[in-house]
Image 1 (cartoon, rainbow, N blue to C red):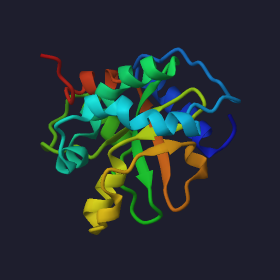
Image 2: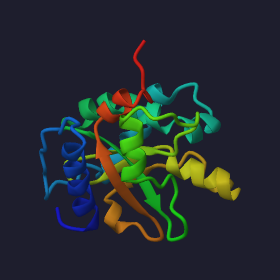
Image 3: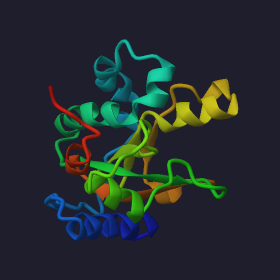
Image 4: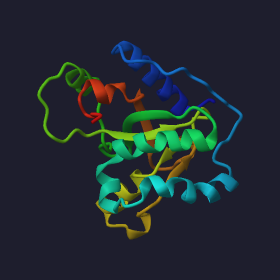
Length: 184
């Protein structure tokens, strides 16, 4: 489990501690690859029930809720811990959904905010592979690339070219404490 993503993920773990957020029990499986060819082939039927009824616009606008709802589905299917991950995407330009410690602190302190908060979520596996069902569609919509609609990132992020997933926080406690996620 070496690489840039793991180092960033460990910093996210430390950031959770820094802000008094719960720290998930970390189980790592450095040699195991969860997204094998056979699992990739099975993936659509596993996630389809959780995504039923969602439009492409929903995928673009609801990444937090979508990945939160997919977490137990993926844990049950893969039989391993799955970590809800908040962060941003380094695209080499300005960064997509880019945020840092000032936003984290202000949201946790309950400071007034606009109705839109620029965050992104995905799932991380113990192997540090990532699972993101919303980013491809978001990129496709923003750049008018129809072939990207419905795409899924399901691989180790260090293997990606042109973008990098930058984890900032782990778990959903930040969303609850900052009132970005409410249970009714």
